[in-house]
Length: 458
Image 1 (cartoon, rainbow, N blue to C red):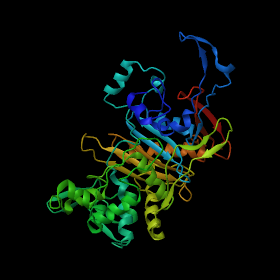
Image 2 (cartoon, rainbow, N blue to C red):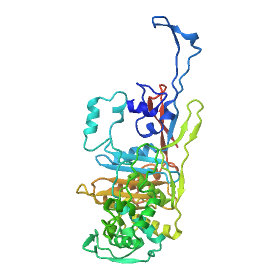
Image 3 (cartoon, helix red, strand yellow):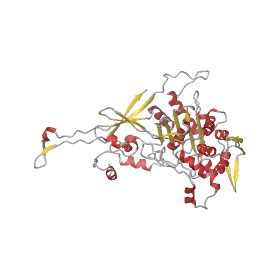
Image 4 (cartoon, rainbow, N blue to C red):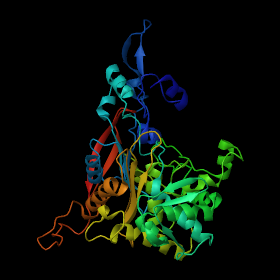
């Protein structure tokens, strides 16, 4: 323990103790630690121990800390990590039915055993000087532009405020001029309406829709979906991201320092907007749940080692209520992104599973290559997994992030990557239920020294 930790944690700790410094071990330090015991001895006038005091009747036995039963699917976690080998970025997968964290990957990462016991100074120095920043949790602490994955927020704001109907359309010729600036698109899409604009990710459509909708309505619904604020996930460390509002823009640029010319970029998830992968996974969960948000959490229950009683961790829930017609339009657009010809997320398609998603290719102001995004949920009608994938400096989201998301969905729902027979049909998969492998974080006998155990459950 450092001196600052001793001051922060207060009574019950002393120099030489080991305490959780980050992640779940810091968040649940009180449950994991247990209670210190005491042994009383008899000493002579020279301070030498001559025996136990009162035959040990006054001794206080130590109490082991509790176990943490995690929500994570160990098989999916290991598989997702393997897909991110030699990449920079993050994957976050949630259970939309309760907000349980199924997998969280941040790459590059580091060997946890380096921090078991005494960490050699050279190992610590190497990790801190590594330009890839392996100690930095990209899943929760970063702030990336969202790119086209944010287009559903604008569609929702426009529909809920009756700015346009779903049949409102534009003619995309590959660019949109506003004032003296030209805002470009990747393709010429021709005549598009809202569902098709989501499916094909037409920038020109959303440039114009943002100008009609305005910053206030857009930022209001973005805030409703949790952007610009922490998700309160129980891993101790999180960046709230950045959600531009009128107040923010006035403060940054002055009331006369910014114009409507800033809006088109925001309409496609660029500009001042900054999000984290955990926020994006929650966004996917809420789109899949038609507005129901569960606080993301990695711990399902705290298990008392003495009584074996499992105390469930309360899960906070809230609900964004939108018109059913709004959900139908936005979700249909996302379904067509994956399932229909011409959708930008075809690479996330999994045979036998109808899913929905949205690709994003976020311009990176600091480096040349764009970031690749994908968010989605599956199955479409009753989701059991919501996912966000972010690959730094990879390029198009549909080419690089979508395939990874599709494989994670396949691995989770089927329990493995599926195989096909000669007719293209899915071969039989053993078992009718998905095998879910959970972890337990357990406090060892000595308070403050934690160990990891694995438990497999069906």
